[in-house]
Length: 172
Length: 259
Image 1 (tube, rainbow over the protein chains, first blue to last red):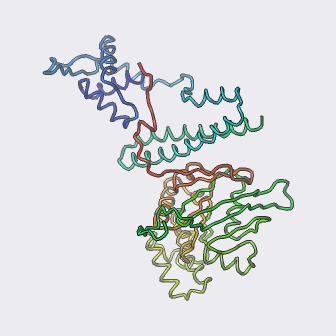
Image 2 (image 1 turned 90 degrees about the vertical axis):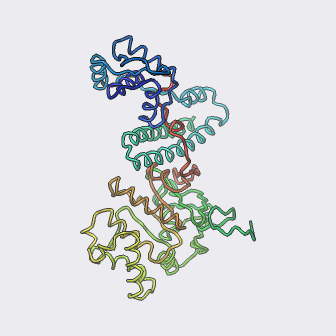
Image 3 (image 1 turned 60 degrees about the vertical axis):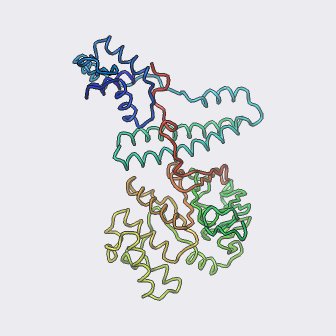
């Protein structure tokens, strides 16, 4: 859904063709989400099918077709932007499964070694995210800095969780 | 590396220990568990090291031992070539005055002295004559961008200015080691960032800094090393790479598996 409404948001602001959409989208998110052009066209097709975007003018040379949001698209975008996110918490990193599985296998200290190395990786990631956050802020990209801050706070939570795992598993 | 033509002091491979703790223990009579238990730690000249741990982990005791404010019950402490373990009170006092610069959470400035007088105090205690101390203090206030508040009293300054004054005071005797104990704990986040950037800049000019904090962002955000304490023992010693030029997509990924 994020991609669909991300594109719709861009097309509500200006008319763009496929490749421009890809570039604008990636730049908006500071390169944290790379799109392939195929998924852009696929999303555009669905948006057009649902009446949320429409082609503008004729297809130019080399097949560049501009698109813009329709008024139905504007309304759908506004509604989506106001909607509260009540999806389940996403825990997608493999470490979660590794801890669950590793705790069951309990093979002579392997879990302890993994947790320690994982903790180092998180400490380094905190530094990387803080550096990127500062850099984005210095470039005046406040909204991007907030994205990195979001990542940093998630990493901080992961770190706390990891330390809880260490405490808990040590006592067994 | 000996005899090498590369004369730089940065990243030399030779051991160049400024602080050396060997199997340090500290127990208090009324406590069931040791405040420090077999702590060994080497900090080299020019390092910016964070000691991180929750309250009660022993980080304050560790700081006090390195500062010569507390004596270990066992083990050995050597800082800047000085054996602290058996030193007399007078020797320890001199060591604190001349080798250590303290930066505290609550600044610890003297409210009846002006800014420049506060900065001059350690120099005068170390025997520097007032005129020379004043010149040095003035230079530091200038370097730290607070020359304009020279004649103010601490209570009339903002938190950030007070901490800068405290840093000037910490630096006036050109200490071998700056000990910073939660230096941003009493500051808002923007001012705290500025104070930490100041410590970063000092470190880049070669100042060895030992930062003590409970805050993982502070510990990882500066310097290159994070030592984690828990229950009086070092449980981890992590190296941090600064300015690792990672692509945003390597740090944060949005929308994997979309569509």
